[in-house]
Image (tube, each protein chain N blue to C red):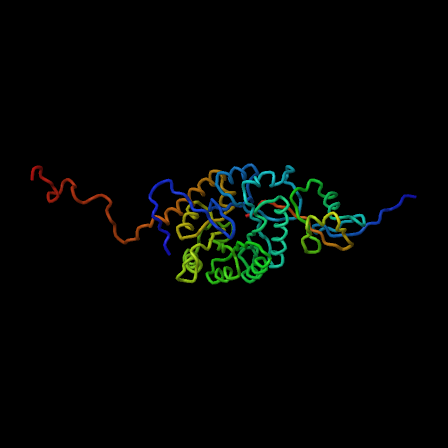
Length: 294
Length: 73
């Protein structure tokens, strides 16, 4: 699998990320939960440069403590809303929530009505996905016409199964949701990328794989992109940073760094040093002296 | 003697509430959540399309969920 391009002239732009019929200019998808207030969320989303944001579906209480709705702080003309099925522990509940999310977004005429971030969880403490329930719900939602972005563990075979079930994107967790541990198992992510994206392994280079969950710091985003992920979905790493808006900026830069770094062809790792300055012409070593006029 | 409007019991967002018989879903939303903007309604575990909210009446024992979007990851 090669990512090397031939472009050598700035500005270096990110190619759009295609997921089903969606084309995202930014490869960062940012969550809207856990910010200290809506204003901070709004600024962080703007600075992140994202054009898709995740939301959750919950029983209507309509308002925050000050009587405001999150929808008052999301520009629905600018952002494609990606509803999730977070908090669902059965395939049945996830399918119900996905359909409710579609109905809500249909009522506000947002393009996000046709896609869903599918989560079926298996355990409250780790929030690790239930692979069986996830696969079951994925099949049902695909049959119902959804573009399904599937949150998964970092199990390579599970990733293949989800793709085969029709998931428009498989989104393996770097590490548990909100843990801030980054890509804990890069070898597994590399295997997922090989199986899903390398034609020699039955993959398709254009199939989008997004690292979802676990990002704590910008270098985690860079790491994911350098491994070959197509994008990163994160929430807590920005929302719970002491300066969420500045962290959103940092995450954006980190994603671009990893994206371009991968496509630049990094050097190989060597045991020994390799001097960057020439040996020839150093002063103080007679053998290297050049005698004028010689 | 005052007439007493007949009521029925339904489960609304997991809470048992008493509503007048022959209440439509649209009326239920208006009555309980007058500021509702972007929401969806599920009746007995099936999404009820917006176009049916005005005509569909709740029945005793119905389970109604009214949901909206909140922050999430």
